[in-house]
Length: 366
Ligand SMILES: *Cc1c(COP(=O)(O)O)cnc(C)c1O
Image (tube, rainbow, N blue to C red; front, side, top):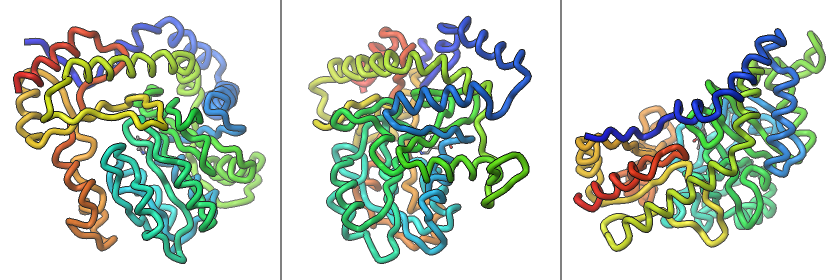
């Protein structure tokens, strides 16, 4: 039986081994390991890639969100709007900034925030919206930005799954007050450990994130605000610089493979394929299909050696850790229904087409 894992990160390393090894070795020989020349260079290169003025390397995507909220002056008692269909860290960042997460259901076609439902969630306490560019596709930013401008609230993009994704030609992460990226190993641009970045055109936000990530210190041992330790290290930055030069090619291959899936599964109506919104360039961080008998499908595929995941099986408002927010089952019907029907299929740039073919044969048999 053919084993098809959900992902395989060693393929990618082996394909660019020489460059990666050279980059790591350069850092080891330099004797400088945290916040140095590699980080500075990567911050500039990634900010340029995102068409933003500033990039500030941090410890993770979660911390990019957390520090961005603090830099936007979000405080205890403030409300921050986001979706219940996201990775838990989107919401933990809000909680650890002291704010109250307020959920809005997702749009049935794009899996991102339903812009028609945002205004009814806004109160006098609302201070920010975090749209999540889920699975590699941007939320409908024009509407979100217009609402935010009208109510004078910040927009912090969770672009942790959307490196290089476009909204009407604009880069994910460049449209709000701040854009937050994760370089967790499995993301479209992944480090060999944890790493993250905040990108922004706002000098004040950039300066505050820069202070917050490094103890609040302006110069060595001179501290101007209370801060954290959330720094990007030189080895990760050097690795990410090598990989950034491949990102567009890798994203293009993801798009081709997504099209191949769609072509090979055409006409099977029990599977709902991901759609690219007319405004979007999707980068398929995940290839998520829907099927009404998802759990049986998952078993069927696993028995045939095909690795799958569910992103995400439990909506955040139904997680034990967020029960204190007071939401109930039934509050977000699209998210809740989809949580029972979604399944992420293997899709990564190095996956060969035989695997993809094999998966679609299994799906047809199902
Ligand atoms: C990965 C991810 C995060 C968190 O990033 P970490 O680097 O793991 O902290 C946040 N939001 C979304 C949507 C993600 O996919």
